[in-house]
Amino acid sequence: MSETDMNATSTGRDDSYEFSIIPIEVPKINTKYRKIITSIPSEDSVQIINQLRQSEPDSMGLELPVVWDKAEDFQVYDAAGNCWIDFSSGTFVVNAGHRHPKICDAITETVKNNYLHNYYFPSKIRAKLVQKLCDMTPKNLDKVFLLTTGAEATECSIKLARIFGRKTNPQKIGIISFIGAMHGKTLGALMVGGKTKEKHWIVNHDPDMHHLPFPDISSDEKTFYDDLKNLEKQGVDLSTIAAFMVESYQGWGALFYPKEYVQALRKWADEHNAIVIFDEIQSGFGRTGKLFAFEHYEVDADLVCCGKGISSGLPLSAVLGRKHLIDVDPSLNSTHGGNPVCCAATLASLEILESENLISESARKGNIIENSLEKLKNRFPNRIQISGKGMVYAIHVKKLSQPGLDVQLVDKIIEKSMQKGVLLIRTGTGTIKIGPPLTIPDDALVDGLSVIEESISELI
Ligand code: PLP
Image 1 (cartoon, rainbow, N blue to C red):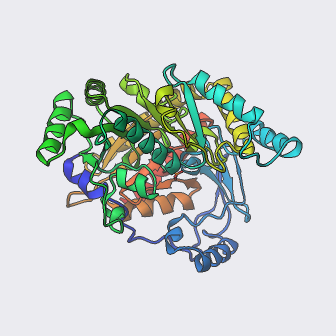
Image 2 (image 1 turned 60 degrees about the vertical axis):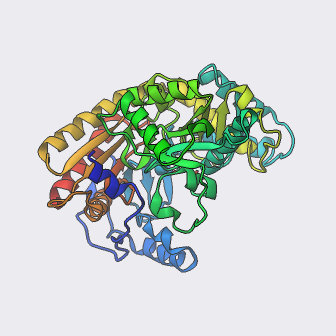
Image 3 (image 1 turned 45 degrees about the horizontal axis):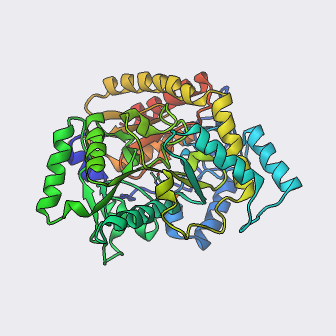
């Protein structure tokens, strides 16, 4: 990825293309995994979308116009009988597939036999879940705090880092993150994130949140130290750095860091009494072919923010961490954190991850994706770049005659793929994001990938 491409895409959405909500006649499809039997969107979908548009923020109109009636494993159905292969996992949530029977059973049993809510009291299911999380994650992560959303987890980790930093130096509250990073949409999460365009309303930016350029493929240890020096030149006192907040791969482009760069960051943090937080909200629980994506860099984490794929469906997030960091704040609790139904679903999902070997399956199936996308890249060498690992990939579609990525063309490719029976993730940045449930069968994966190639070749 060149600098120009990064700058063009890392700062926020360019929403100039609107998915059509006028039903269009499209070729009918009836294959093993895909069925398109009506105009798209279907007439009754349009009615529902219009109702939503009247009462919801305009921004919700960015959704693909597929009104879900039912989702099962790797497939999504609408009420008109159309059926799609889901390459989105509901934006990286259903790692164990939609409505896995064991997750549904765990939820149903809790609802039928126990309770929907038990805040602010202990529960057996919460105890089982936190034990499981401590057992299955790296040894140094010995405590867990449960929350509800990803942004809450990143906000919480910022707080822990700062309280801990201030124990040695009252000014030690600096957090270093990366340009283009996504850590959530609440105030602190947005400020620590690196999507400049989305921060216009903040006005009073936190002067102790700093952003380094996202390292490109050629970056190494020296790049990291040079970037820190630049920060120093801008007036940042590096002794005030409490933490690095690292999105384990950069979401919009499924971009991974060079290993040497992250190892240098880890070393510097250790030498300067700073902690390293990995944001695994999108990348955790097998998505990249390892339990956590940061394991690709062969470093330790001090705090890990989890969400999305942790539960395969219900809202639960977590901060995992070293005991002395989690215990540094005596005020941690949250009304829906550790909700028993969400705990039951999460525990079941983690057990499925293990019993169905979904982490190694993710690595294996990732090779299928990579081989297919390599062929695509070779077919369109001037227009396409790819990045990713395991079950997350991004196809970067370059503009024809100028630098930057082609946001509009990508949106049209996503729309075309929807008309052919495949649901993709819209990033609004010129990348087609692929993230199927880790359970998807090989032939469905290959079929979905062939639809992407077909759509690209029809439109590029
Ligand atoms: N961090 C990362 C890396 C994410 O991808 C997201 C969501 O997309 C978040 C944080 C925020 O999570 P949530 O939308 O649950 O607040």
